[in-house]
Image (tube, rainbow, N blue to C red):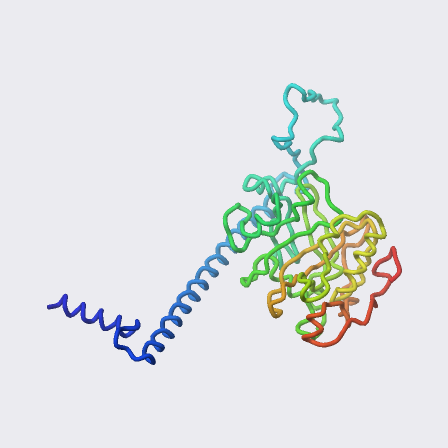
Length: 368
């Protein structure tokens, strides 16, 4: 009797939820709507839980690695700038039969491997693809503070973390076409990172974007964070931010500026033309000048909230020169009243580009 009663209750529940023989069409429609809504709710809740779990895991892993990196150079009795000679990669190492014997009198050769900074030694035990570290802001309270990896393509680390584990957050990674592992550097180091809803990785770079939906604002975030610290395995450098631009990547939406072609420059004219186009598009200006020969750093992430456009927010910085004051007079920063956008932007928000107006002193090797 009890089993029969339980079966009847179960059957009644099924009839309430699912379309049943004899139901009117309005009742069938109501049940279908309910089922679809329930599925959407379940998927949404599951997605939120998965995203939050991923965020917490990312946050934990990144903080753990940050402590390892920033703490490794403070051992008692050691110099934080001390470096250690890098062993050649197995594929490139000299065989014992052909390697020249080392003596105390032997001078280092030009082919000697560069020296790895002490901070990177424990990181390389985790992943040999680790090539750098980027920090914006105070390292004790940074806006951005992450390890940088470099793969064999620009796809792998879009969905793998620095432990080479599958991750929808991916990693911050350097463009694979210009390896940073041998001590050489391109004219312009390009770093990519996801714009995560959790705020991790390059999401906070969007705060530097001082134009929103046709309205220009003061470059307040630039004024708070005008410099970037970027360390390769071998050297630590300070870079001064000088531009930030919103870039369209779809020809169907208008002009596309192929900014990734500016990784290396054939000559001064090539450099000047490229930087000129960057300054045309920059949404803010600073008093940081740029000239041919300055090593550059480019940070690229997605802008996700403009229609269905496939946009990028791209920021540029140039390395502090020898003997130059690394500080920046942020009071001289101001909003570009007329940055160059693209056709879809102007169709939606109005206006048009009025032509090049940036001050010629920003690009000291040319005239605008």
